[in-house]
Amino acid sequence: MTRIFVPKDAAALALGANKLAAKIAGEAKARGQAMEIVRTGSRGAFFLEPLIEVETPQGRIGYGPVSAADVASLFDAGFLSGGAYPQRIGKPEEHPFLKGQTRLTFARCGIIDPLSLSDYAAQDGFRGLKRAIEIGPQAIVAEVTKSGLRGRGGAGFPTGIKWKTAADTSADRKYVVCNADEGDSGTFADRMIMEGDPFALIEGMTICGIGIGATKGYVYCRSEYPHAGRTFAEAIQIALEAGYLGPKILGSGYAFELELRMGAGAYICGEETSLLDSLEGKRGIVRAKPPLPAHKGLFGKPTIINNVLSLVAVPTVLDRGAEFYAGFGFGRSRGTMPIQIAGNVRYGGLYETGFGLTLGEIVDGIGGGTYSGRPVRAVQCGGPLGAYFPRALFDTRYDYEAFTAKDGLLGHGGIVVFDDTVDMAKMARFAMEFCAVESCGKCTPCRIGSVRGMEVIDRVLEGVRPAENIALLEDLCNTMKFGSLCALGGFVPFPVMSAIRHFREDFRPRALAAAE
Ligand SMILES: Cc1cc2nc3c(=O)[nH]c(=O)nc-3n(C[C@H](O)[C@H](O)[C@H](O)COP(=O)(O)O)c2cc1C
Ligand code: SF4
Image 1 (cartoon, rainbow, N blue to C red):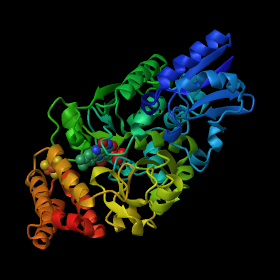
Image 2 (image 1 turned 45 degrees about the vertical axis):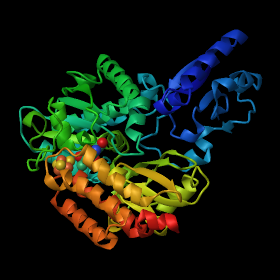
Image 3 (image 1 turned 30 degrees about the vertical axis):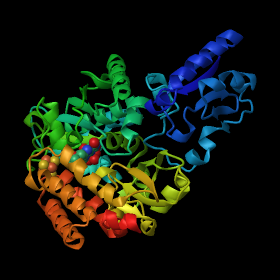
Image 4 (image 1 turned 90 degrees about the horizontal axis):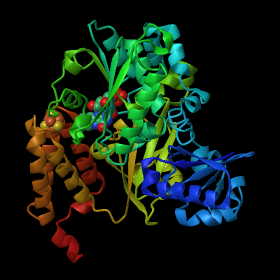
């Protein structure tokens, strides 16, 4: 029977994928054509969504973007056997957006039925877990360390070193916590995994549990991700029933159980210690470090907190070896990064590749410039705490060190593009406002400084002693940078200062600017 693949990723659903699937089923029935609809995740080429694919003897053929209104004409064009159609893209993996990618973390996303264990196993699923069980905890941690994998949640801390700290700490209980709060603007990779390849996260967390000696894990999922939550909860149940979770994983002596918790809807609950407070049922407030969570984390026990993408990279490291994974990337940034290109961009979506492209190659080459067709003026990399890059810095290499050298941040891999209509003074003010709204309130530089920051920017724009107030703003930014307890207050100066440094002309008094 012909199989048709229709995504059920939230981005595709927002663009009418459910209506489209229903229309295809109805049309096939009316025409007496036998077929099966398989719901998948997304391949991440959002400008092609909804992207449907049909299985033909030549391989899968894609059509996108298509809507329910196209269905009758798709049938007329013989799409069930790969017939010609204006939106026919041929084999998806040969589409320019997908062809240049190195998909390790997203190898299965958009291809398999996310809740089919047999699909998952047929595409190398659980091979990493099997090897992990064979080699045991010490060798697991050594392999992850050797791979050079660094945390994909924002800070880029070496994952293996963190795991070793928790593994070497003795305790009656340890925990693995997956940070799926995904609060950064323009990011959606964690969501795509939970909706499109949830067993990969289960596998990565289980390997971590075996590696550090934890038998319980929690996934803390962003509250705005109902689809991800539902799919992941189902995946946990399926994995449990099949023995991939539970008291004897794959019949081994290792136990691991998993619980899903929906987040509290606060940006700060993505910060690891606030997240722990929130998981414990408290209001999310940043904890002072030390102690590190790896020593004293959830309920006071040694805890590994890793981002979804860090954990999903682990099965590949175990299955194909640390050297294979470390073979991708640049300098000390090893492996691949699922880059999320968003904002005013022509080809928005997820692009996984080894570190090392330039920012210009990503924005102009892969992203195709702006959606509006106007010139790109700025891109914000790394979420709301990341710097704004002007075109003059588009030769910056996409790796942790190169970005740090330019006072930037890779963060969780988000890139938000702006055209030449953007007002960078407004963006700087927004950064301060965001910090004021999202601050947990524990420390003064962030709680008070962010409010004062908004006021100072307002004064500059009102023409009140602008030069003096810009100097004051720079001083305030330094206080926040060096005096804040966590990276919310500590990093918000980066978008603000980069806006001043690279787009100083936008900080003129508004009355003056309007008169010109
Ligand atoms: C304000 C703030 C928000 C954060 N939000 C997230 C988030 O949404 N997801 C995430 O994985 N890490 C987030 N982090 C980073 C975490 O504190 C932590 O570094 C990360 O979960 C560690 O996992 P990793 O080593 O795999 O990156 C945030 C940090 C700060 C300071
Ligand atoms: S910097 Fe802000 S969010 Fe972080 S601890 Fe201080 S008040 Fe809380």
